[in-house]
Image (cartoon, rainbow, N blue to C red; front, side):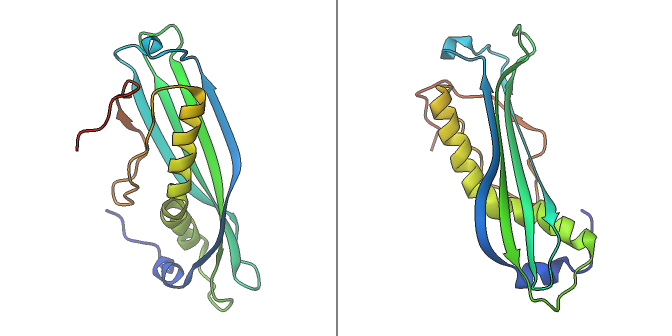
Length: 164
């Protein structure tokens, strides 16, 4: 595991979330019924964050947190069966005298930005999948240590509940 960038802990210690809002979304589907999902279909979840605006003179800065969910199949005539993509912007404030380096801000955006926006992204993906009438898609809890980039799992047929 790599060492945190110098200054990241200070940002984490002092950052306050002021606002989280959806700024971009996109969805597409080739799935019309659960029968359209081939047995080899896989769900791929990728996420990431980046600094959209560095801290200003008062300490306000913006992070863009992104999630992308794809349902794909190697055997289907169309490899991408469904796509849900969302970008949420998180507005933070740190003390004006705190001047973190760019690499610490990017590291903060990649982990904390995504972590703070994750509940909103989970809700967006679940509701969008429902409106698209595809089988339910529920994002797992966000675990910064494991990162979700490239995580794959099988989509569940509609109506099936997770084992408890």
